[in-house]
Image 1 (cartoon, rainbow, N blue to C red):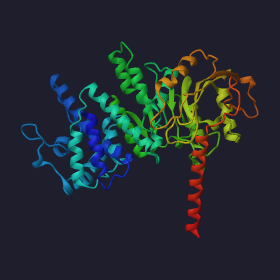
Image 2: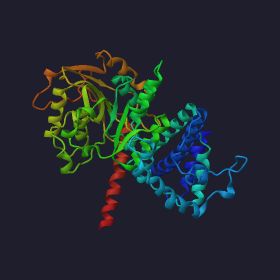
Image 3: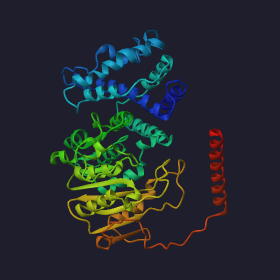
Image 4: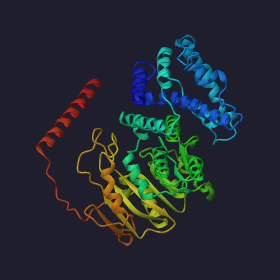
Length: 484
């Protein structure tokens, strides 16, 4: 039922002039889902208070509650079309009354870790893009069919929402920033092995996939006490995210996974000077896939001892600083980090090897990140002791990966098993730190178990490439002709 409701919402938004892509569909679905979730949460808390013979003060005022404007009901509990706003009246109410009201919560909330503050933050960052009040009315009726009142319902909704995020990533543009393949995340969590009571941090949260998967990992532990569950809810997961859309999606994703008031801060992580980070701000575990290829301004670079415009290199410095002594990290980074000869890359590799135990490097195959033409590696390290040996694992899934054939959990099974003992296999090997050239600290992936024979390609592959190059040349010539 939920899956059909999600499909129907997408179909409605697809026809609206204000929504043009998967990014828009996810954004607009998110704010409606959030308000429906909030309504169900308030109902649940009111019923609990009644059972306990206590008073409950709702967060949202009566005239702005879900059942007052989004889904009014008649005496029999059926949808009341006679009293439901629609058309221009609905758009005017949402844009000029509802959103400004919800935005005001940011100023009136007691602190940033409350649900009230999250409401204000979300509606300060997001806009209603739906232009037709009739489309919005149809979408609201579909959202009203969804329920957040049981763990099973929340689990199904979180699964569907993850699918939306994945589709958004596959849609191109900048959507790919928000989606790291979940099998890769789960493997990173398996290796770092978080425990109840440890804090987990992602300073480049995107859609908060790392924190959601880590929550699921810890939530499935047997024998969790009510104190453990409170710890997971309130003081385990921490994140920062710079972009407005990603921030809203991260909040919604964590809520759907069962974290009521996520500790996600909307800020530019790299805007904080490393020298100002206190011991109390550090974390036990860092799981992240920071953006790479970006160029940070000179004033941002001044916050870091190793100056560079490369966003990912600045994030890596931030993560090292944010780890507690003995803390564990798993960070995705472009594979050229291992061999770049610029001063910043060399200095950063030296820093990593001398001040952390870079115990494992997972070399991911092309196609791991759908739509991204870059190769990546995952760095696994612990803070506080220098590296003695680096264990490499060259992942080979034996097929070309793409949208219809993505990375799966089984692909990473051997890596997770072999990493436990740093085993030497055809795909894995160790390098003593003393063997690394200290003028460059080059960590290039060079599998000693494989020869470098040139593999001859199939004729069909060569013909396909020639045709692609011909097409590209034709497009270039046409663009030149247009200029002339």
